[in-house]
Image (cartoon, rainbow, N blue to C red; front, side, top):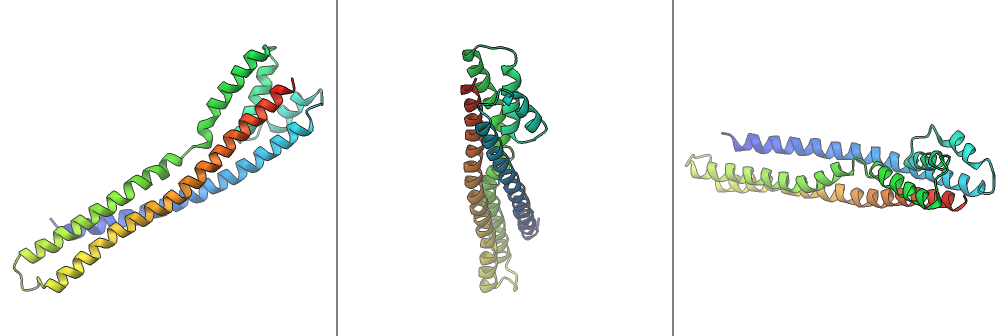
Length: 200
C-alpha cells in the first residue's frame, strides 16, 4: 500500500473541502444579507401602518409571496389572527410560529460546523500517513532512503495538518459571524410578530 498516494488523496479532498466551504460562505452571505434587508422592510412597514385598520390585509398583500422567514412569520400571524383567537391564544400561536421558522435562519450552518470539526482530523490523518510512508522508506534499507529526504517527506506531511487547521479557522470565522446574523433574523421575526400582536 502506498501511504504517499493516500496522503495525496487526503490533500486533494481537503482542497475540495475548502472550495465547498467557500461556496457555502458566499451562499449564506447572500442569504443573510437579503433576509435581514427584507426583515427591516417588514418591520418598517408594520411600524408605519400600526394605526391603519386595513393593516392585516396590507401585510398579506405586501409580503405573502416573499421568501424570508420574517415575512412568512408575519403573514402566518396575520392569518391566525383572522380566526378570532383570544390574546392569550395568539401569544402561543406567535411562539409556535417563531419556533417553526427558527431553523430557516440556521439552515446549512451545520455544514460549516462539520467542516470545522473534520478539517483538523483530515489534516492529522494526512500527516500521519505521510510520516508512516517516510519511516517505511527509511526502514526499507534502500540506498534512496536518505535521512534528509525522509526529513523533507515528514516536513511535507506536516502541510496536511497546517491546511486542516487553516480550513477550520477559516470556516469558524464565518460560522460565528453567520450565527450572529441568524440570531438577528430570529430576533427580528419575534419583534415584528409581537409588535403586530400588541397592536391588536
